[in-house]
Amino acid sequence: MTNLPTTLNPATAPSQGEALAIAQTRVTEDWLAVWIGLFVFALSLALLFGIDLLGWAVTTSVWTVPSKALAPASKHFANLPAPLSLVATYFFLLAVLLVGAKALRADLKRFAAGFTAIFIVSYACWFLGSWAYIAATPDKRPALKIAWSLNLTNESGFIIALLAGLVVGNFLPRVARALKEAVRPELYIKTAIVILGGFLGIAALEQRQLATSVIFRGICAIIEAYLIYWPIVYFISRRYFGFSREWAAPLASGISICGVSAAIATGSAIRARPIVPIMVSSLVVIFSVIELMVLPFAAQHFLYGQPMVAGAWMGLAVKTDGAAVASGAITDALIRAKALAATGVVYQAGWIMGVSATVKVFIDVFIGVWAFILAWIWSAKIERLPGEKVRVVEIWQRFPKFILGYVATFLIVLAIGIVVPGLIPKVKASMAQANLFRSIFFLMTFFAIGVLSNFRKLWQEGIAKLAAVYVLCLFGYIIWVGLLISWLFFHGVLPPTLRG
Amino acid sequence: MTEPRIAEELEKMESDYEPLLPVERKLICYTFGTGVVLLAIFVLISRWFV
Image (cartoon, rainbow over all chains, first blue to last red):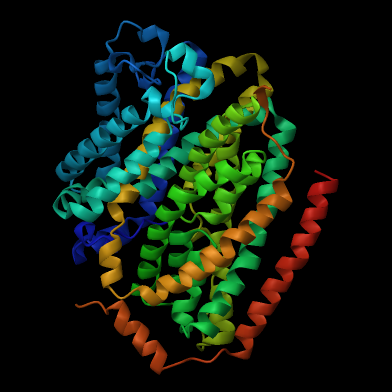
């Protein structure tokens, strides 16, 4: 919904003028994700007319010999050397994002330089994460002629990218400063989510009843998250930690709902000073990183028999869009690998991440409504000011616009598949191409989240008491209630299987 | 313009404690109560009808 606070890491902190520009372009970045996502989606759909516009994009396979790792996505471009395919992918993304950066009034030279570095490091992490000894699942080991592997799938590249980002954010402040113009995890993840809509549309086409069930359960789960999480966190902050209303409300929204977006929306709803949601958001991002590194592995260990519960849990427990959907992606890969190794069941890819994304998207949809409700309560009951009214249009103003892109790609794919079922294989091939870009946007999100997370600086700011509320509520309440709610709604719902 | 440090903000909050208002208690109780009731209803619907 809104930009991640770049004040999180002092190395990436904007100047006052830059902060003003960010504030003025806040909505634009949300819309920008829609247009970039739809652009990639539209190009991929050209396959329906026999035109392969994205077949040159690079794809990375699990490898034992580095030279065999990269290849163009489509057989139409089989003669294109793999390094050229990678370079073409880079230039395509650079061109598209430069147009976006211009719309955001960013410094184009600095953006190009920052993006280049982010792309190179992120893709290097993806490449490393695809090394067979790290990524290969047990069923792939004989073909790759290896005796063992960590069984982490190539999504381990996401974790490596996050770690690389953390190193830059915490130990290389000058590098972080040099990259800051292109460190935009919210833009990257929202673009990825728009593209993801089409990919999930394919899944829904193939399993319509299951998809309907997931959407319904997702809506139920998030309503519960708002109503059960928020009041308890607010109460604990006010009653036991003595926080003022100005701090407790954004803190409760930040911990309970969708992190950064909710904290900022709540902050503006109750007319809190800007410093309040920004500091809460900083905390949200830091803890999202911790959740991202812990919860998918916990889910793999304990919930591989209930994959959809695990997916919903990521959506409900991990804050910020980027970290939640990213956790869903890692959980998807880890659980499928574990289920295969432990039981021989091969789950269809994408469903677990799809549940995480569905839950997260619905949470985002309701942020505007929740902010409106809080704004009304604050202005009418708590801090009543004469003549002040809350306008319904504020719900739309606070609505995260990238969701429109997600819904559009989802519905377009669904509509094509329903109206012309014969086109489904071609739509599937189109979405597979678009999905390559989704993975790259994901990767850059992970790296950018890491760069933004400066643990040491935040501690120096004296944030211990805020962090104490966060730790208590998140690890003592939210995570477990989220697990319970996910279990109640998704227990026994399984993704389609390919084998087993 | 200097931004307030978090530590100072938190110290200020301790000295100027704002007690929970009745309307806040109502907000907490009604929200949580509605959540629990809806939870039961939605779980039943999702088990029986979806």
